[in-house]
Length: 593
Ligand code: ADP
Ligand code: MG
Figure 1 (spheres, rainbow, N blue to C red):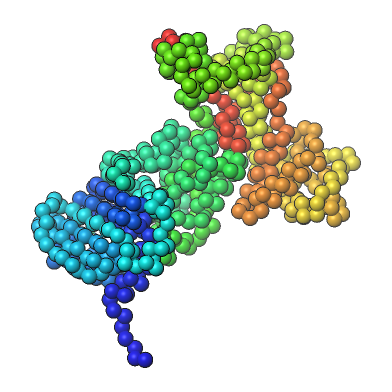
Figure 2: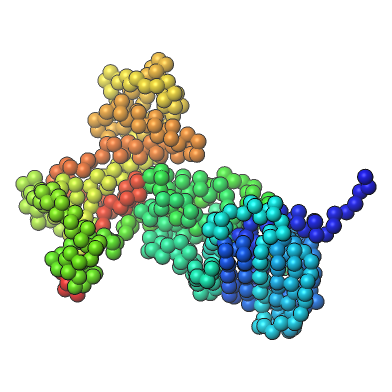
Protein backbone atom coordinates (compact mmCIF):
# COMPACT_ATOMS: atom_id res chain seq x y z
CA UNK A 1 0.00 0.00 0.00
CA UNK A 2 1.38 3.39 -0.90
CA UNK A 3 1.74 6.17 1.63
CA UNK A 4 -0.61 9.09 1.14
CA UNK A 5 -1.34 12.33 2.98
CA UNK A 6 -4.66 12.49 4.80
CA UNK A 7 -7.09 14.80 3.05
CA UNK A 8 -7.38 18.19 4.79
CA UNK A 9 -10.98 17.69 5.81
CA UNK A 10 -10.20 14.39 7.48
CA UNK A 11 -7.29 15.94 9.35
CA UNK A 12 -9.63 18.62 10.64
CA UNK A 13 -12.16 16.07 11.77
CA UNK A 14 -9.52 14.14 13.62
CA UNK A 15 -8.43 17.39 15.29
CA UNK A 16 -12.05 18.14 16.06
CA UNK A 17 -12.09 14.94 18.06
CA UNK A 18 -9.67 16.63 20.44
CA UNK A 19 -10.72 20.26 20.31
CA UNK A 20 -14.48 19.91 19.94
CA UNK A 21 -15.68 17.27 22.30
CA UNK A 22 -19.11 18.74 22.87
CA UNK A 23 -20.99 22.03 22.49
CA UNK A 24 -19.35 23.50 25.57
CA UNK A 25 -15.88 23.08 24.11
CA UNK A 26 -16.89 24.70 20.81
CA UNK A 27 -18.50 27.57 22.71
CA UNK A 28 -15.41 27.97 24.86
CA UNK A 29 -13.14 28.25 21.81
CA UNK A 30 -15.39 30.89 20.24
CA UNK A 31 -15.56 32.95 23.42
CA UNK A 32 -11.81 32.71 23.85
CA UNK A 33 -11.38 34.04 20.33
CA UNK A 34 -13.65 36.95 21.19
CA UNK A 35 -11.62 37.68 24.33
CA UNK A 36 -8.38 37.50 22.37
CA UNK A 37 -9.88 39.93 19.83
CA UNK A 38 -10.11 42.56 22.59
CA UNK A 39 -13.89 42.50 22.89
CA UNK A 40 -15.50 44.74 25.54
CA UNK A 41 -18.79 42.92 25.31
CA UNK A 42 -19.55 39.29 24.42
CA UNK A 43 -22.97 37.89 23.74
CA UNK A 44 -23.49 34.12 23.90
CA UNK A 45 -26.76 32.62 22.76
CA UNK A 46 -27.45 28.86 22.82
CA UNK A 47 -30.33 26.68 21.92
CA UNK A 48 -30.90 23.05 22.75
CA UNK A 49 -27.89 22.93 25.04
CA UNK A 50 -25.71 24.21 22.18
CA UNK A 51 -26.38 21.07 20.12
CA UNK A 52 -28.84 22.94 17.91
CA UNK A 53 -27.11 26.31 17.87
CA UNK A 54 -24.30 28.30 19.43
CA UNK A 55 -23.98 31.97 18.62
CA UNK A 56 -21.10 34.07 19.90
CA UNK A 57 -20.99 37.73 19.04
CA UNK A 58 -18.29 40.22 19.99
CA UNK A 59 -17.23 43.81 19.40
CA UNK A 60 -13.54 42.97 19.05
CA UNK A 61 -11.06 43.81 16.32
CA UNK A 62 -12.73 41.69 13.63
CA UNK A 63 -11.04 39.76 10.82
CA UNK A 64 -10.12 41.42 7.54
CA UNK A 65 -12.03 40.08 4.55
CA UNK A 66 -8.92 38.71 2.85
CA UNK A 67 -7.84 36.86 6.01
CA UNK A 68 -11.08 35.06 6.77
CA UNK A 69 -10.24 32.08 4.59
CA UNK A 70 -6.87 31.80 6.30
CA UNK A 71 -8.54 31.74 9.72
CA UNK A 72 -10.14 28.44 8.65
CA UNK A 73 -6.85 26.86 7.70
CA UNK A 74 -5.16 24.59 10.18
CA UNK A 75 -2.37 26.07 12.24
CA UNK A 76 -3.08 29.53 10.93
CA UNK A 77 -3.12 32.04 13.78
CA UNK A 78 -2.55 35.74 14.36
CA UNK A 79 -1.41 35.12 17.90
CA UNK A 80 2.21 34.07 17.75
CA UNK A 81 4.11 37.26 17.05
CA UNK A 82 7.58 35.99 17.96
CA UNK A 83 6.84 32.29 17.85
CA UNK A 84 7.74 31.88 21.54
CA UNK A 85 5.09 29.55 22.91
CA UNK A 86 5.95 30.19 26.55
CA UNK A 87 5.41 33.91 26.09
CA UNK A 88 1.91 33.64 24.63
CA UNK A 89 -0.60 35.65 26.62
CA UNK A 90 -3.64 35.01 24.46
CA UNK A 91 -6.02 32.14 25.20
CA UNK A 92 -5.58 30.59 21.76
CA UNK A 93 -2.52 30.17 19.61
CA UNK A 94 -2.81 26.79 17.92
CA UNK A 95 -5.00 27.95 15.09
CA UNK A 96 -7.06 24.78 15.31
CA UNK A 97 -10.43 25.81 16.68
CA UNK A 98 -12.14 27.41 13.69
CA UNK A 99 -11.16 24.73 11.12
CA UNK A 100 -12.05 21.96 13.59
CA UNK A 101 -15.48 23.31 14.47
CA UNK A 102 -16.23 24.13 10.83
CA UNK A 103 -15.42 20.55 9.83
CA UNK A 104 -18.15 19.08 12.04
CA UNK A 105 -21.03 21.59 11.82
CA UNK A 106 -22.75 24.28 9.83
CA UNK A 107 -20.73 27.37 10.61
CA UNK A 108 -21.38 30.96 9.61
CA UNK A 109 -18.81 33.62 10.43
CA UNK A 110 -19.47 37.30 9.89
CA UNK A 111 -16.81 39.83 10.67
CA UNK A 112 -15.80 43.40 10.15
CA UNK A 113 -12.64 45.29 11.09
CA UNK A 114 -12.45 49.02 11.87
CA UNK A 115 -11.16 49.82 8.40
CA UNK A 116 -12.94 47.24 6.23
CA UNK A 117 -16.45 46.15 5.28
CA UNK A 118 -18.43 43.27 6.69
CA UNK A 119 -17.92 39.85 5.11
CA UNK A 120 -19.76 36.60 5.76
CA UNK A 121 -18.76 33.02 5.02
CA UNK A 122 -20.74 29.85 5.43
CA UNK A 123 -19.01 26.50 5.79
CA UNK A 124 -20.94 23.27 5.61
CA UNK A 125 -19.13 20.47 7.43
CA UNK A 126 -15.75 21.55 6.14
CA UNK A 127 -16.74 22.80 2.66
CA UNK A 128 -16.78 26.53 2.01
CA UNK A 129 -20.33 27.04 0.72
CA UNK A 130 -20.91 30.77 0.36
CA UNK A 131 -19.06 34.05 0.88
CA UNK A 132 -20.74 37.43 0.59
CA UNK A 133 -20.79 40.97 1.93
CA UNK A 134 -22.83 41.70 5.05
CA UNK A 135 -23.84 44.93 6.77
CA UNK A 136 -22.60 45.02 10.36
CA UNK A 137 -20.68 47.06 12.92
CA UNK A 138 -17.12 46.20 13.93
CA UNK A 139 -16.70 42.78 15.51
CA UNK A 140 -17.31 39.14 14.81
CA UNK A 141 -20.34 36.88 14.95
CA UNK A 142 -19.99 33.10 14.71
CA UNK A 143 -22.98 30.81 14.50
CA UNK A 144 -22.51 27.05 14.85
CA UNK A 145 -25.54 24.96 13.96
CA UNK A 146 -26.25 21.25 13.93
CA UNK A 147 -23.03 20.18 15.60
CA UNK A 148 -21.98 16.62 14.66
CA UNK A 149 -25.13 16.13 12.59
CA UNK A 150 -23.10 14.53 9.81
CA UNK A 151 -20.97 12.54 12.23
CA UNK A 152 -23.25 10.06 13.99
CA UNK A 153 -20.32 8.41 15.73
CA UNK A 154 -19.75 11.67 17.61
CA UNK A 155 -23.31 12.78 17.94
CA UNK A 156 -24.27 9.67 19.87
CA UNK A 157 -21.82 10.58 22.60
CA UNK A 158 -23.58 13.85 23.30
CA UNK A 159 -25.65 13.87 26.44
CA UNK A 160 -29.10 15.38 26.88
CA UNK A 161 -29.55 19.05 25.97
CA UNK A 162 -29.86 19.74 29.71
CA UNK A 163 -26.52 18.19 30.49
CA UNK A 164 -24.85 19.87 27.52
CA UNK A 165 -26.34 23.16 28.62
CA UNK A 166 -24.96 22.68 32.13
CA UNK A 167 -21.48 22.14 30.70
CA UNK A 168 -21.82 25.28 28.56
CA UNK A 169 -22.94 27.31 31.57
CA UNK A 170 -19.99 26.10 33.61
CA UNK A 171 -17.54 27.03 30.84
CA UNK A 172 -19.16 30.43 30.28
CA UNK A 173 -19.09 31.13 34.00
CA UNK A 174 -15.41 30.41 34.25
CA UNK A 175 -14.56 32.63 31.29
CA UNK A 176 -16.75 35.48 32.57
CA UNK A 177 -15.25 35.16 36.04
CA UNK A 178 -11.74 35.51 34.67
CA UNK A 179 -12.59 38.76 32.90
CA UNK A 180 -14.59 41.23 34.97
CA UNK A 181 -13.50 43.94 32.56
CA UNK A 182 -15.60 42.42 29.77
CA UNK A 183 -19.39 42.53 29.69
CA UNK A 184 -21.04 39.11 29.20
CA UNK A 185 -24.56 38.18 28.19
CA UNK A 186 -25.50 34.51 28.27
CA UNK A 187 -28.82 33.19 27.00
CA UNK A 188 -30.27 29.73 26.60
CA UNK A 189 -33.41 28.91 24.63
CA UNK A 190 -34.40 32.56 24.70
CA UNK A 191 -33.93 32.93 28.44
CA UNK A 192 -31.34 35.33 29.85
CA UNK A 193 -29.15 33.39 32.27
CA UNK A 194 -26.70 36.14 33.13
CA UNK A 195 -26.07 39.64 31.98
CA UNK A 196 -22.98 41.20 33.47
CA UNK A 197 -21.79 44.73 32.87
CA UNK A 198 -18.22 45.42 31.76
CA UNK A 199 -15.84 46.70 34.45
CA UNK A 200 -17.15 44.73 37.44
CA UNK A 201 -14.69 44.30 40.29
CA UNK A 202 -13.68 40.78 41.09
CA UNK A 203 -15.79 40.25 44.19
CA UNK A 204 -18.97 41.39 42.50
CA UNK A 205 -18.28 39.43 39.35
CA UNK A 206 -17.66 36.24 41.32
CA UNK A 207 -20.73 36.85 43.47
CA UNK A 208 -22.90 37.51 40.42
CA UNK A 209 -21.81 34.18 38.95
CA UNK A 210 -22.10 32.09 42.12
CA UNK A 211 -24.32 33.53 44.81
CA UNK A 212 -25.03 37.20 45.38
CA UNK A 213 -24.83 36.73 49.12
CA UNK A 214 -21.17 35.81 48.71
CA UNK A 215 -20.38 39.52 48.53
CA UNK A 216 -21.19 39.84 52.25
CA UNK A 217 -19.92 36.44 53.29
CA UNK A 218 -16.40 36.25 51.98
CA UNK A 219 -12.87 37.44 52.55
CA UNK A 220 -10.42 38.72 49.98
CA UNK A 221 -7.21 36.82 49.34
CA UNK A 222 -3.99 38.51 48.41
CA UNK A 223 -0.67 36.84 49.00
CA UNK A 224 2.73 36.85 47.29
CA UNK A 225 5.27 34.12 47.67
CA UNK A 226 8.45 34.30 45.64
CA UNK A 227 7.42 34.86 42.06
CA UNK A 228 3.87 33.66 42.62
CA UNK A 229 0.86 35.71 43.47
CA UNK A 230 -2.46 34.37 44.70
CA UNK A 231 -5.52 36.57 44.85
CA UNK A 232 -9.23 36.02 44.85
CA UNK A 233 -12.29 35.52 46.97
CA UNK A 234 -12.99 32.89 49.62
CA UNK A 235 -16.39 32.26 51.16
CA UNK A 236 -16.59 32.26 54.95
CA UNK A 237 -16.83 28.73 56.33
CA UNK A 238 -20.43 29.39 57.35
CA UNK A 239 -21.24 30.09 53.72
CA UNK A 240 -20.94 26.49 52.62
CA UNK A 241 -22.71 24.46 49.98
CA UNK A 242 -23.67 20.84 49.53
CA UNK A 243 -21.62 20.56 46.35
CA UNK A 244 -18.09 21.57 45.42
CA UNK A 245 -19.44 23.19 42.26
CA UNK A 246 -18.34 26.71 43.09
CA UNK A 247 -14.61 26.26 43.36
CA UNK A 248 -12.73 28.01 40.62
CA UNK A 249 -9.06 28.29 39.76
CA UNK A 250 -7.50 30.59 37.20
CA UNK A 251 -3.87 30.30 36.25
CA UNK A 252 -2.45 33.37 34.55
CA UNK A 253 -5.98 34.46 33.74
CA UNK A 254 -6.97 31.13 32.21
CA UNK A 255 -9.72 29.03 33.79
CA UNK A 256 -8.29 25.63 34.66
CA UNK A 257 -9.57 22.51 36.31
CA UNK A 258 -7.07 20.88 38.54
CA UNK A 259 -7.40 18.19 41.16
CA UNK A 260 -4.92 20.10 43.23
CA UNK A 261 -7.52 22.80 43.88
CA UNK A 262 -10.16 20.71 45.60
CA UNK A 263 -7.58 19.01 47.81
CA UNK A 264 -6.00 22.30 48.82
CA UNK A 265 -9.36 23.89 49.57
CA UNK A 266 -10.37 20.90 51.63
CA UNK A 267 -7.11 21.18 53.53
CA UNK A 268 -7.53 24.89 54.20
CA UNK A 269 -11.07 24.58 55.50
CA UNK A 270 -10.43 21.20 57.08
CA UNK A 271 -11.57 21.86 60.60
CA UNK A 272 -14.13 24.52 59.78
CA UNK A 273 -16.47 22.52 57.59
CA UNK A 274 -18.02 19.14 58.02
CA UNK A 275 -17.00 16.62 55.39
CA UNK A 276 -20.11 16.84 53.28
CA UNK A 277 -20.06 20.62 52.96
CA UNK A 278 -18.00 22.66 50.54
CA UNK A 279 -16.57 26.14 50.46
CA UNK A 280 -17.04 28.66 47.68
CA UNK A 281 -13.73 29.96 46.32
CA UNK A 282 -12.41 31.72 43.24
CA UNK A 283 -8.64 31.79 43.18
CA UNK A 284 -6.42 33.58 40.72
CA UNK A 285 -2.88 32.36 40.54
CA UNK A 286 -0.29 34.34 38.63
CA UNK A 287 3.14 32.87 38.10
CA UNK A 288 5.98 33.04 35.57
CA UNK A 289 5.38 31.07 32.37
CA UNK A 290 8.18 28.59 33.12
CA UNK A 291 6.55 27.52 36.39
CA UNK A 292 3.55 26.06 34.60
CA UNK A 293 2.71 24.24 31.42
CA UNK A 294 -0.73 25.18 30.18
CA UNK A 295 -0.20 23.16 27.08
CA UNK A 296 -0.98 19.72 28.47
CA UNK A 297 -4.13 19.15 26.48
CA UNK A 298 -5.44 21.09 23.49
CA UNK A 299 -8.89 21.68 24.92
CA UNK A 300 -9.22 20.29 28.41
CA UNK A 301 -8.26 23.04 30.78
CA UNK A 302 -5.49 21.15 32.48
CA UNK A 303 -2.18 22.50 33.62
CA UNK A 304 1.02 21.03 34.93
CA UNK A 305 2.86 22.89 37.66
CA UNK A 306 6.61 22.57 37.94
CA UNK A 307 6.26 22.44 41.73
CA UNK A 308 2.73 21.32 42.63
CA UNK A 309 3.48 21.04 46.35
CA UNK A 310 4.56 24.66 46.45
CA UNK A 311 1.39 25.75 44.68
CA UNK A 312 -0.69 23.66 47.02
CA UNK A 313 1.05 25.21 50.02
CA UNK A 314 0.44 28.67 48.61
CA UNK A 315 -3.28 27.99 48.22
CA UNK A 316 -3.70 26.45 51.67
CA UNK A 317 -1.58 29.22 53.24
CA UNK A 318 -3.37 31.99 51.35
CA UNK A 319 -6.81 30.74 52.28
CA UNK A 320 -5.83 30.23 55.91
CA UNK A 321 -4.29 33.67 56.19
CA UNK A 322 -7.35 35.30 54.68
CA UNK A 323 -9.75 33.35 56.88
CA UNK A 324 -7.61 34.19 59.93
CA UNK A 325 -7.69 37.87 59.07
CA UNK A 326 -11.43 37.59 58.56
CA UNK A 327 -11.09 36.06 62.00
CA UNK A 328 -14.05 35.78 64.23
CA UNK A 329 -16.07 37.88 61.89
CA UNK A 330 -19.65 37.08 62.32
CA UNK A 331 -20.85 34.25 60.50
CA UNK A 332 -23.82 36.01 59.07
CA UNK A 333 -26.17 38.62 60.29
CA UNK A 334 -29.51 37.05 61.15
CA UNK A 335 -30.76 36.18 57.69
CA UNK A 336 -34.01 37.38 56.26
CA UNK A 337 -35.31 33.83 56.44
CA UNK A 338 -34.39 33.56 60.11
CA UNK A 339 -35.91 36.93 60.81
CA UNK A 340 -39.14 35.77 59.28
CA UNK A 341 -39.32 33.06 61.90
CA UNK A 342 -39.85 35.60 64.63
CA UNK A 343 -43.57 35.55 64.98
CA UNK A 344 -45.62 38.42 66.24
CA UNK A 345 -49.29 38.86 66.82
CA UNK A 346 -50.74 40.22 63.63
CA UNK A 347 -48.29 38.96 61.06
CA UNK A 348 -44.72 38.55 59.94
CA UNK A 349 -42.11 41.17 60.36
CA UNK A 350 -41.33 41.97 56.77
CA UNK A 351 -44.72 41.08 55.47
CA UNK A 352 -46.22 44.13 57.12
CA UNK A 353 -49.91 43.60 57.71
CA UNK A 354 -50.20 39.91 56.87
CA UNK A 355 -52.89 38.42 59.11
CA UNK A 356 -51.48 35.72 61.38
CA UNK A 357 -52.75 32.60 59.63
CA UNK A 358 -53.16 33.81 56.08
CA UNK A 359 -49.74 33.30 54.54
CA UNK A 360 -49.16 29.61 53.98
CA UNK A 361 -45.54 29.66 55.12
CA UNK A 362 -46.52 31.60 58.20
CA UNK A 363 -49.32 29.20 58.92
CA UNK A 364 -47.03 26.20 58.84
CA UNK A 365 -44.63 27.80 61.23
CA UNK A 366 -47.36 29.04 63.48
CA UNK A 367 -48.78 25.55 63.59
CA UNK A 368 -45.40 24.24 64.65
CA UNK A 369 -45.17 26.87 67.27
CA UNK A 370 -48.28 25.57 68.91
CA UNK A 371 -47.38 21.97 68.32
CA UNK A 372 -44.88 22.03 71.13
CA UNK A 373 -46.13 24.67 73.51
CA UNK A 374 -44.82 22.97 76.60
CA UNK A 375 -41.26 22.87 75.39
CA UNK A 376 -41.20 26.50 74.47
CA UNK A 377 -42.62 27.47 77.78
CA UNK A 378 -39.94 25.49 79.58
CA UNK A 379 -37.19 27.11 77.63
CA UNK A 380 -38.37 30.55 78.48
CA UNK A 381 -38.70 29.64 82.10
CA UNK A 382 -35.07 28.79 82.09
CA UNK A 383 -34.24 32.43 81.42
CA UNK A 384 -31.25 32.72 83.60
CA UNK A 385 -31.53 32.78 87.24
CA UNK A 386 -27.76 32.71 86.68
CA UNK A 387 -26.69 30.68 89.62
CA UNK A 388 -28.20 33.20 91.98
CA UNK A 389 -26.40 36.25 90.66
CA UNK A 390 -27.82 39.62 89.80
CA UNK A 391 -28.01 39.20 86.09
CA UNK A 392 -27.87 42.79 85.04
CA UNK A 393 -24.83 43.77 87.09
CA UNK A 394 -21.99 43.90 84.60
CA UNK A 395 -19.05 41.88 85.82
CA UNK A 396 -16.83 43.99 83.63
CA UNK A 397 -17.91 47.54 82.99
CA UNK A 398 -16.16 47.71 79.63
CA UNK A 399 -17.85 44.66 78.17
CA UNK A 400 -20.88 46.43 76.75
CA UNK A 401 -18.59 47.97 74.13
CA UNK A 402 -17.10 44.62 73.24
CA UNK A 403 -18.34 43.15 69.94
CA UNK A 404 -20.24 40.35 71.65
CA UNK A 405 -21.40 42.53 74.54
CA UNK A 406 -22.16 41.45 78.05
CA UNK A 407 -24.02 38.29 79.06
CA UNK A 408 -27.50 38.98 80.34
CA UNK A 409 -28.75 35.46 80.65
CA UNK A 410 -29.05 31.98 79.29
CA UNK A 411 -32.03 30.24 77.74
CA UNK A 412 -32.69 26.58 77.42
CA UNK A 413 -29.36 26.01 79.17
CA UNK A 414 -28.03 26.20 75.62
CA UNK A 415 -27.95 29.76 74.37
CA UNK A 416 -26.36 32.81 75.92
CA UNK A 417 -28.14 36.13 75.50
CA UNK A 418 -25.84 39.13 75.53
CA UNK A 419 -26.36 42.83 75.16
CA UNK A 420 -24.03 44.79 72.90
CA UNK A 421 -24.12 48.52 72.25
CA UNK A 422 -25.78 47.94 68.91
CA UNK A 423 -28.13 45.07 69.59
CA UNK A 424 -28.81 41.62 70.96
CA UNK A 425 -26.34 38.76 70.59
CA UNK A 426 -27.31 35.10 70.80
CA UNK A 427 -24.52 32.58 71.29
CA UNK A 428 -24.69 28.81 70.88
CA UNK A 429 -22.57 27.87 73.87
CA UNK A 430 -21.61 24.40 72.74
CA UNK A 431 -20.65 25.46 69.23
CA UNK A 432 -18.65 28.38 70.60
CA UNK A 433 -16.88 26.40 73.24
CA UNK A 434 -15.98 23.66 70.84
CA UNK A 435 -14.35 26.21 68.60
CA UNK A 436 -12.40 27.75 71.46
CA UNK A 437 -11.12 24.36 72.63
CA UNK A 438 -9.97 23.56 69.13
CA UNK A 439 -8.17 26.86 68.67
CA UNK A 440 -6.51 26.42 72.05
CA UNK A 441 -5.38 22.90 71.18
CA UNK A 442 -4.09 24.07 67.87
CA UNK A 443 -2.24 27.03 69.33
CA UNK A 444 -0.57 24.89 71.95
CA UNK A 445 0.20 22.13 69.48
CA UNK A 446 2.03 24.49 67.18
CA UNK A 447 3.93 25.96 70.13
CA UNK A 448 5.38 23.91 72.95
CA UNK A 449 2.76 21.20 72.60
CA UNK A 450 -0.47 20.60 74.46
CA UNK A 451 0.00 19.80 78.13
CA UNK A 452 -0.46 16.12 78.87
CA UNK A 453 -2.30 14.77 81.86
CA UNK A 454 -0.54 11.53 82.87
CA UNK A 455 -2.76 8.63 83.84
CA UNK A 456 -1.59 6.79 86.92
CA UNK A 457 -2.08 3.31 85.57
CA UNK A 458 -2.68 3.87 81.94
CA UNK A 459 -5.92 2.91 80.31
CA UNK A 460 -6.15 -0.11 78.02
CA UNK A 461 -8.58 0.25 75.13
CA UNK A 462 -9.39 -2.80 73.06
CA UNK A 463 -10.07 -2.18 69.43
CA UNK A 464 -9.79 -3.69 65.97
CA UNK A 465 -6.34 -4.40 64.68
CA UNK A 466 -6.57 -2.02 61.69
CA UNK A 467 -7.70 0.77 63.98
CA UNK A 468 -4.73 0.06 66.23
CA UNK A 469 -2.42 0.19 63.24
CA UNK A 470 -3.72 3.60 62.30
CA UNK A 471 -3.42 4.95 65.79
CA UNK A 472 0.06 3.57 66.15
CA UNK A 473 1.13 5.30 62.94
CA UNK A 474 -0.25 8.59 64.20
CA UNK A 475 1.04 8.23 67.76
CA UNK A 476 3.86 10.71 67.40
CA UNK A 477 1.60 13.41 66.00
CA UNK A 478 -1.03 12.75 68.62
CA UNK A 479 1.56 13.23 71.37
CA UNK A 480 1.85 16.86 70.28
CA UNK A 481 -1.78 17.19 71.30
CA UNK A 482 -1.07 15.71 74.72
CA UNK A 483 -2.42 12.29 73.85
CA UNK A 484 0.20 9.64 74.57
CA UNK A 485 -0.63 6.15 73.35
CA UNK A 486 1.22 2.92 72.68
CA UNK A 487 0.41 -0.36 71.05
CA UNK A 488 -0.66 -2.93 73.60
CA UNK A 489 -0.73 -6.28 71.86
CA UNK A 490 -2.33 -6.89 68.49
CA UNK A 491 -5.77 -5.51 69.26
CA UNK A 492 -5.44 -2.97 72.04
CA UNK A 493 -3.90 0.43 72.76
CA UNK A 494 -2.52 1.72 76.02
CA UNK A 495 -3.31 5.35 76.86
CA UNK A 496 -0.60 6.88 79.05
CA UNK A 497 -1.70 10.50 79.03
CA UNK A 498 -4.60 12.60 77.74
CA UNK A 499 -4.74 16.26 76.64
CA UNK A 500 -4.92 18.33 79.85
CA UNK A 501 -7.25 21.03 78.46
CA UNK A 502 -9.93 18.40 77.95
CA UNK A 503 -10.10 17.49 81.61
CA UNK A 504 -11.48 14.06 82.32
CA UNK A 505 -11.70 12.01 79.15
CA UNK A 506 -13.45 8.81 78.17
CA UNK A 507 -10.39 7.17 76.63
CA UNK A 508 -12.20 4.39 74.79
CA UNK A 509 -14.56 6.77 73.12
CA UNK A 510 -11.85 9.23 72.23
CA UNK A 511 -9.61 6.60 70.64
CA UNK A 512 -12.47 5.15 68.63
CA UNK A 513 -13.42 8.56 67.32
CA UNK A 514 -9.85 9.29 66.37
CA UNK A 515 -9.42 5.97 64.63
CA UNK A 516 -12.62 6.63 62.67
CA UNK A 517 -11.38 10.06 61.76
CA UNK A 518 -8.05 8.76 60.60
CA UNK A 519 -9.78 6.13 58.50
CA UNK A 520 -12.17 8.62 56.93
CA UNK A 521 -9.33 10.86 55.82
CA UNK A 522 -6.92 8.17 54.86
CA UNK A 523 -6.52 9.01 51.23
CA UNK A 524 -7.21 12.65 50.50
CA UNK A 525 -5.40 14.36 53.37
CA UNK A 526 -1.82 14.43 54.53
CA UNK A 527 -1.11 13.25 58.07
CA UNK A 528 -0.82 16.77 59.56
CA UNK A 529 -4.19 17.61 58.03
CA UNK A 530 -5.71 14.46 59.43
CA UNK A 531 -4.34 15.36 62.82
CA UNK A 532 -6.14 18.69 62.49
CA UNK A 533 -9.33 16.70 62.14
CA UNK A 534 -8.43 14.71 65.16
CA UNK A 535 -8.06 17.90 67.15
CA UNK A 536 -11.52 18.88 65.98
CA UNK A 537 -12.80 15.54 67.25
CA UNK A 538 -11.22 16.20 70.65
CA UNK A 539 -12.90 19.55 70.75
CA UNK A 540 -16.27 18.36 69.63
CA UNK A 541 -16.67 15.59 72.13
CA UNK A 542 -15.25 17.31 75.11
CA UNK A 543 -16.66 20.81 75.07
CA UNK A 544 -19.35 22.39 77.17
CA UNK A 545 -22.48 20.53 76.25
CA UNK A 546 -25.66 22.22 75.37
CA UNK A 547 -27.83 21.88 78.44
CA UNK A 548 -25.34 23.06 81.04
CA UNK A 549 -26.27 26.06 83.12
CA UNK A 550 -23.43 28.58 83.15
CA UNK A 551 -22.68 31.31 85.66
CA UNK A 552 -22.50 34.93 84.54
CA UNK A 553 -18.74 34.87 84.99
CA UNK A 554 -18.45 31.74 82.85
CA UNK A 555 -20.59 33.23 80.13
CA UNK A 556 -18.68 36.49 80.03
CA UNK A 557 -15.40 34.63 80.01
CA UNK A 558 -16.65 32.65 77.04
CA UNK A 559 -17.66 35.82 75.17
CA UNK A 560 -14.32 37.51 75.81
CA UNK A 561 -12.40 34.46 74.70
CA UNK A 562 -14.46 34.26 71.52
CA UNK A 563 -13.57 37.83 70.69
CA UNK A 564 -9.90 37.08 71.11
CA UNK A 565 -9.88 33.81 69.17
CA UNK A 566 -9.52 33.42 65.41
CA UNK A 567 -12.34 31.68 63.59
CA UNK A 568 -14.63 31.84 66.58
CA UNK A 569 -17.48 32.92 64.30
CA UNK A 570 -18.16 29.35 63.31
CA UNK A 571 -18.02 25.98 64.93
CA UNK A 572 -15.91 23.15 63.60
CA UNK A 573 -18.72 22.12 61.31
CA UNK A 574 -19.21 25.52 59.74
CA UNK A 575 -22.32 26.49 61.64
CA UNK A 576 -22.39 29.98 63.12
CA UNK A 577 -21.54 30.20 66.83
CA UNK A 578 -23.38 33.44 67.31
CA UNK A 579 -25.88 35.71 65.62
CA UNK A 580 -26.79 39.30 66.22
CA UNK A 581 -30.09 41.10 66.06
CA UNK A 582 -29.40 44.82 65.56
CA UNK A 583 -31.57 47.34 67.27
CA UNK A 584 -32.83 48.19 63.82
CA UNK A 585 -34.04 44.58 63.41
CA UNK A 586 -35.59 44.62 66.84
CA UNK A 587 -37.40 47.83 66.01
CA UNK A 588 -38.76 46.16 62.90
CA UNK A 589 -40.03 43.33 65.05
CA UNK A 590 -42.05 45.79 67.04
CA UNK A 591 -43.14 47.69 63.95
CA UNK A 592 -41.38 50.78 65.22
CA UNK A 593 -40.02 51.38 61.74
P1 ADP B 1 -6.31 30.52 17.49
O1 ADP B 1 -7.32 31.19 18.37
O2 ADP B 1 -5.58 29.44 18.18
O3 ADP B 1 -5.43 31.50 16.79
P2 ADP B 1 -8.57 29.82 15.90
O4 ADP B 1 -8.80 28.76 14.92
O5 ADP B 1 -9.44 29.85 17.10
O6 ADP B 1 -7.08 29.75 16.33
O7 ADP B 1 -8.69 31.20 15.18
C1 ADP B 1 -7.87 31.45 14.05
C2 ADP B 1 -7.66 32.95 13.88
O8 ADP B 1 -8.87 33.58 13.49
C3 ADP B 1 -7.22 33.67 15.13
O9 ADP B 1 -5.83 33.62 15.30
C4 ADP B 1 -7.71 35.10 14.87
O10 ADP B 1 -6.79 35.81 14.11
C5 ADP B 1 -8.94 34.88 14.03
N1 ADP B 1 -10.17 34.97 14.82
C6 ADP B 1 -10.94 33.95 15.24
N2 ADP B 1 -12.02 34.40 15.94
C7 ADP B 1 -11.91 35.75 15.96
C8 ADP B 1 -12.72 36.80 16.54
N3 ADP B 1 -13.84 36.55 17.24
N4 ADP B 1 -12.31 38.08 16.35
C9 ADP B 1 -11.17 38.35 15.65
N5 ADP B 1 -10.39 37.40 15.10
C10 ADP B 1 -10.75 36.12 15.24
MG1 MG C 1 -8.94 30.24 19.15
